[in-house]
Length: 84
Image (cartoon, rainbow, N blue to C red):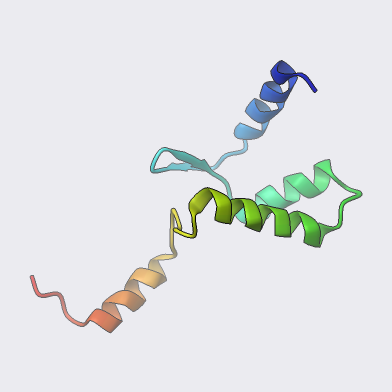
């Protein structure tokens, strides 16, 4: 596939993106897996998920872009009342 065709595919996929977080386009994990499974029906779904997780770790260096708000609630519970 030439670069222009590849860019067109990426651009089409980008329309499925849900949000931008800290300047990074993001999509729900399930939707990413669903699109990849649809585009690669002969691939083992477990392999697709493993690839996405490996790419996430490489991209993020293990630091999440977003966390559930319950994570912040839990941190506050551990830290106790605010000092301010």
